Image 1 (spheres, rainbow, N blue to C red):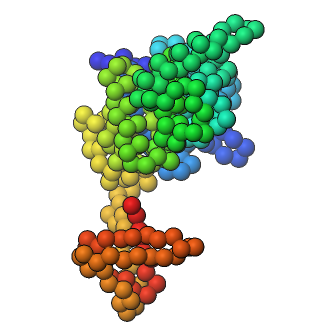
Image 2: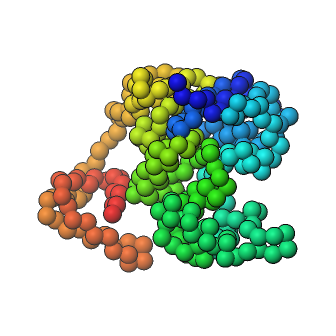
Image 3: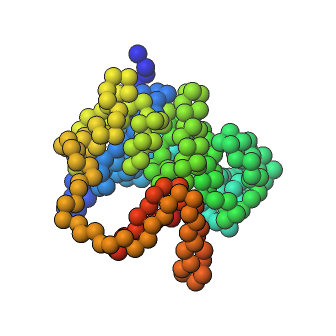
Amino acid sequence: MAKILLEMKNITKTFPGVKALDNVNLQVEEGEIHALVGENGAGKSTLMNVLSGIYPYGTYDGNIIYNGEICKFNTIKDSEEKGIVIIHQELALIPYMTIGENMYLGNERGSSLSINWNETYGEADKYLKIVGLEESSRTLIKDIGVGKQQLVEIAKALAKNAKLLILDEPTASLNEDDSQALLELLLKFKKQGMTSIIISHKLNEISYVADKITVIRDGSTIETLDKKKDDFSEQRIIQGMVGREMTDRFPKRPDVKIGDVSMEVKPGDKVVFSKYGGTEIKYQGEEYTIMRQDDILAVVE
């Protein structure tokens, strides 16, 4: 049986007039990828802020047991010293500092009087290679895209000797390719023994990468699904999130009035739309498309 790395017992967190978490329980096994899902405001990020010390001990009720030890984190530094590192949805990187400077900000290499820049950039380059980034750690953050910035955050976590990596909506601002690369990186870390907790609304990604899913609804733990024995479909996850079976996820609109045909695109046709200051968007029709009055046309690359 796998070792329980993290146990959060009866966690209750109250803000003025609002009970954000109500006796939430969570168990995470060592070496697994554990997903937290729930609607907006369900309490997922609040729970992780409790775990990471952002909400310090004494501001909530319940116990955090990590690696067999009851933990009372007062700051995020306390949790990082135990190997618990959280990466928030809003990336905490400074654009006009280098990758290496960002990675070791607050955790500088060297003495109290001077920073050892050779050690800083040398170590940073090592962790960048682990996450698959070819950029030099001397590159400014502003000169790399959001997908690579997310990888810098993960490299930063590795530099803190992360044993439990928490990712809050890591793919929210990423394109499909960058999202897939990040998920594959998490699976690679899993093979190396790292434990991860991921919060995401992208249920297809959760189904792909997670070993277990804990559903939180209205500040309470509803259930934990295990990929080895439970239904991991999006329909089943949504049912847990909203508390009912979703028989009509995309309801029909029977009273919609459709106007006369105003444009048709047939296979082989090429249409050029010139709008918004002369910007041209070209579309090579592959399917028979009908445009009627008041229709909205989306053109994607």
